[in-house]
Amino acid sequence: MALNRNEIFRTVGWTGAVLLLAAGLRYSVEGIFSTLVKVLLVAGAALLLISIVALFRSIVSFFSRRSSKLGTNTGVLVVVVLAILGIINFLGYRHHKRYDLTSEKLYTLSDQTRKIAGGLKTDVDVYSFVKTPDQSLNDLMAEYSNLSPHIHYHVVDPQEHPELAKQYGIDSIGQAVAVVGVRNQRLDGKDEQDVTGAILKLTRDSVKTICFVEGHSEKSISGENASYSTVTGELVKEGYQTKVVNLVSTGTVPTDCSVLVDAGPVQPLFPQEVTMIQQYLDNSGKALLMIDPQTDPKLEPIFTEWNISAPDNIAVDASGVGRLFGIGPAAPLVVDYGDSPITKNFQRAMTFFPMARTVSIADKSKTDMSPVELLKTSQASFAVDKITNNEVKFDPATDMRGPLSLGVTAEMNQNGKDARLVVIGDSDFASDQWSRMARNGDLFYNIINWLAQDENLISIRPRNPQNRRVDLTEAQQRSLQWFTVLLLPGIVILTGIYIWWKRR
Image (cartoon, rainbow, N blue to C red; front, side, top):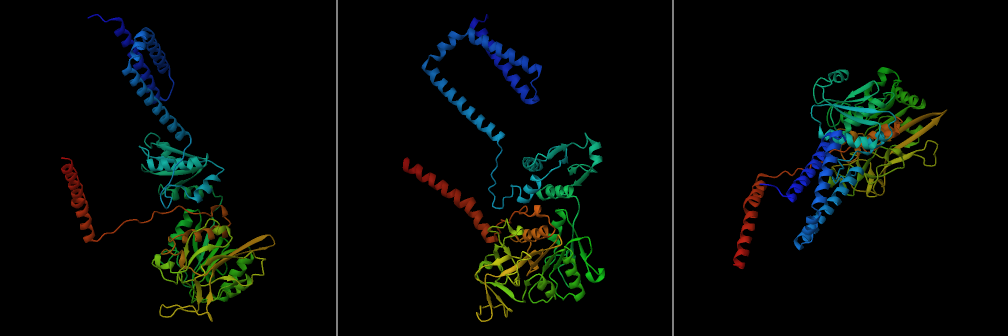
């Protein structure tokens, strides 16, 4: 059967539309405006134009009908809506913005990472050796790349590039490595802490050593609960190295100690050890001394020299806030902080100090060492000499009313040398049991950063997700099953039957 003129040109028009569609698909796949794409575009546009010109009268007649006008209006609205959505999508692509609605801001890079990445002056390349991209790591590294143009992320198939895998010691698929120049650091994990820790280690010129004093029943840097294994592990991630020192054995504070930490000595230090610490501080040393109530570490000569008062008492918080967290009044809450780089980002942050003693400035008229009372309890707190039978009651005749100071920082500059000292009236706040509570861990790390003169690291660290699981008893589980399986569907069915009956 012979085709009439209109059918021929309709076929030409549809052919042109197909060619244009093919050109678009080809370009979307290749991403290149190749010769084939150009030919398809020109041919398609030419055929479509010929069809429109040849069928112009038929097209005008078609759109003059009432039904066609309505259809055209609908088509135009659809095109306008699609155009608006396209523009919104384009703007979203060009102006990247995410909103993290989690309470802990789990999907927002921490203040520490922003400071470190924003301050980079050298290129950091992160290689992920996988066959198929790890989407979570891709998203994380995209955030890093947004922070700094010096951070570059590469996905490498180790089977296609075995020479690169061999160069960085990759022995299995799924491993990742960060590279700065000729130095590289394997990523133990693929979260923010691992990536930021690797960047720190690779970009630091030298490794500073944090020395923990032992020999007087101080907190151990290994073990559980009462130990400092958690905080020392985090210090290693930040590019420090840690070790224990026995001042009696060494006869002096080792010269490689960037910061000396004495975490809760139970037995008193020997006079010679106290003299060693004094000499270390006199030679621009940096030290953190944490002393607990009901102990006498014999550190008064240092406190006197640095204008610090640390009486043997116990700080008590009578506000009742501790009950909300399952702790008693002998673990005072601190939300008021002194003007120090250590706590500059701690607005409205909470820290807890189980069994703490007061530490304050002895003579506030002396300002030669720039002393700062770092931690202040609430007005509902007070200090007592001892707690008997777990009962405390304020006695205005003998007890000290709050706010109380639980920590002091001081600096001394002699002959161009800067010595720094921090004294905290509690050592448990940084232990494994307490370091993850509120901002206790951040406080300890910031103190070390300040003492080590790494102010650029002082910040709020990445947060860990809170455990929000709901544990139900067996009876509660059965009740929930009855409600969801029988009661709720039964209510819906009966409501439907009732409405049907009323409308019948």
